[in-house]
Length: 203
Image (cartoon, rainbow, N blue to C red; front, side, top):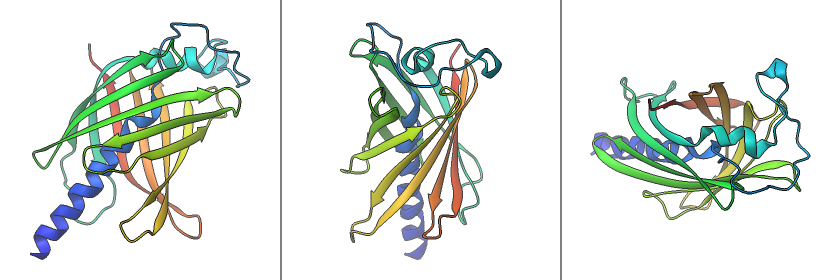
C-alpha cells in the first residue's frame, strides 16, 4: 500500500512538473503589430538583435521533443521521461499556445498553456492547465537579458488549502534548444531544484 501511495505521489509530482514545464516559454511570431514593448531587447553581445520580446520569443514556435529529469528526489525514476510539445502563435502574435503530450509511468498526461509578454507591466505572464488537475496555474516572470533567461513565479495550493511557491527558470541555449529548471521555495526563501526539462526542436 505504501509503495502504491509513493508511486501515486510521484506521478502527481511528475505530472505537475510536466504541466509547468513547457509552459513558460513560448511566444509566437508576430503575425500582427504588437504595441511597443518597453523591455530591454537582446543586444548583439547577448546573441540577439534589437527585437521586441514578442519577436524574440516568436522564434520558439514549432515542434519539440522534451526530456524530463527529476533532481535529488528520493524514489525518483532514474531514467528520464519523454514527451512532445507543439508551440503555435495565436492572436496576431501577441500570445502563444503550447500543447504538450507526455507519458508518465505509462500513463498519458496532456497539458496546455497560453503565454505572452505584457508591455504595460513589463512582465511575462502565463496560464497553465493539465489533465491531472482542475487548477489553473498563473505565472509571472521577468528577464534582465532580453528574454534569453526568464525567471517565473507561481503559487500552488493543496487540497487542504496550504499554498506553496514555485520558481521556474527558462534558459535559451540556442535557436533549437531551451531548458526549464523548476524549484520549490522554502519559507526562508531557499530554492531547491527538483525538475529539469530540455526542449529540442524537431528536425
